[in-house]
Image 1 (cartoon, rainbow, N blue to C red):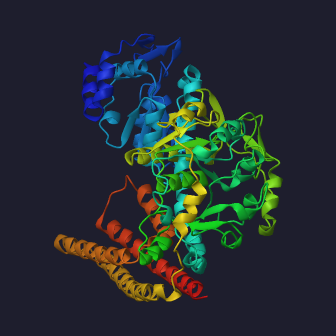
Image 2 (image 1 turned 180 degrees about the horizontal axis):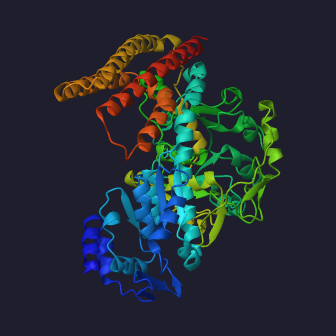
Image 3 (image 1 turned 60 degrees about the vertical axis):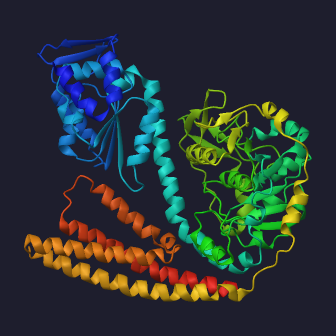
Amino acid sequence: MIFAQNLDLLRQRSPELAAALEAETGEGVELGIGPSGVPTITESGLLLASAYAPETEGLRMAEEMDRTDPDLMIALGFGLGHHLEAFRARNRCPLVVFEPSRARLRAALGARSQREILSRSDVYLVEDTGDLHAFVSHLYTSGLRMGVFPLPSLLRLAPKTIREAVDRIAQAKSAADIAVHTRVQMLVQWATITAGNGRSLRETPSLSRLHGAFSGRTAVVACAGPSLTKQLPALKRVRDRVLLLSIGQAVGALREAGLEPDLVHVLESLPVVHQLEKGGSSESLNLVVTPDVDPSLFECPVATRFVGTPESNKLARWLYEVLGDEQFLIGGGSVAHGTVAIAAALGARRIVLLGQDLAFTDGEAYARGSAYAETGFELCEDGRFRWKNVEAKHAQFASLNWELRNPAQQTFWVEGWRGDKVPTSRAYASFIDQYTSMAASLERAGVTLVNCTEGGARIPKVLHEPFAAIEADLGEAFDARRTLQDRLKGWSAPKPDVFDSRIEEARQALDALETDARRAADEAERRLEELAREPAPGRVIQLLKRTRKRQAAISKALDAIPWLDDVLQPELQATHADLCRTYGDEQTPARAIESSLAQLRSVEVGVERARGLLERLAGSLAS
């Protein structure tokens, strides 16, 4: 009877899991009665909860779970559910419960009523690490306090599973934190660099001139991972039948093998010209830069130079649209992601990854001959890792006066190319996740992404093949460099005044937005004062409607300056995290208006920052 009632509750939330539990035999798990008359569950001779006082034990665990006042809680192990109920009584934040054993979960649903857990819309029950990763990715917002609590009995029964679950949680959190750092913390910096590069952007042809130039071809993206070294002889055999793209760091490794890339991509906002000079002069290279690269990358001598604008760089898009440019690159977190996006824009039907280890392979971090080949890694006794010879890499940026610190970092263990487990870093783990979504986007566009690295990490939902498997299907030889030169014929830089009217329109829009945002914020403060006097219900509704109307008008004004969102992100992200943190709190009219007020004040700050950015851009274009 108890099991049937619990199953009915679960079926409303997860019919597939409910059906699986109904068919589960429960073999290996015993349901019994303890000395004090309470239900018990035993597996391999180990009790999942106290046989004498499980509720008291659950309260003690809940206190430990709530010790850091988490905004999101991940419980590893269902047990008998006592600790989960006790935690929910203390903290109403979202709760994700990971229970990898259907036999244990079936026993728990048959032992006692789990209504307090199964009937809650903000309690999520998952049974595999893939789903766990997905739920954490969905629920976690950077800035929230996340707690992870492994059930002691599960630590003893399934330590390997617990380790894998913790790794997947850490990967999801890391990916979200890195994405926010990129999107929020760096967007203002990148927009500022873009504005300073205004003249260089005007004087450099857009990558859109090459759009579709290599339609139907196979592109090879050479990355700087240690596995690239062993693939270079095979790459050399088919060199004239592939479009060879390289990230800046891998140029030296290719040249050491007698290979010259067709295009080199660099997106760093640091002075990395040394990457292009590894093994030879930069003068022979065809370079693709993003609008926010260090200015030195617009000044170094190259054969040709193009600007590839990511969709995420709204300021550069806003500029190039004046010139009729509509071809922008799909986003990515690394220079390798960007190079894949370039290959797709150029029309490649198949994009092959080489040297994209995304992990540490055979004790190495970079390919032989690459820009940072001297840098390696070592595992520490505590399971973390530390970079080796990192000083050689930092020396390339001596002008930045970096303090050379090399703390031990958390090691992530992910599935390897051959199905084993390989060590990697926090950043690399996040890049793996980004590749998965990128591959899906490419597939929808009819482009196949193939990982032929034959080492390092495995990328979920991406085709993995040995490089030899694609050699027979490459088509005839072609001259990529001649195509590049042909596409560049007839191009000339637009005159500086082509952007004048757009910049003046933006100045006027910023002035109007600032006035409207300040007026709306002042009105929101007056509405809060009126709410404090407890007006009639009808008046409260009227105040909320006016707030929403004002906010809608501001949102419409923001749309008129698409790049303004980038410079607003630091304040808006902080506001978003605060809203997520109060997930379980009562959503009162006052809270709704306070939220609107916080966003309006963020707009005021962002407008002032945007005005300085616009003047920097105007000055650069006119220089």
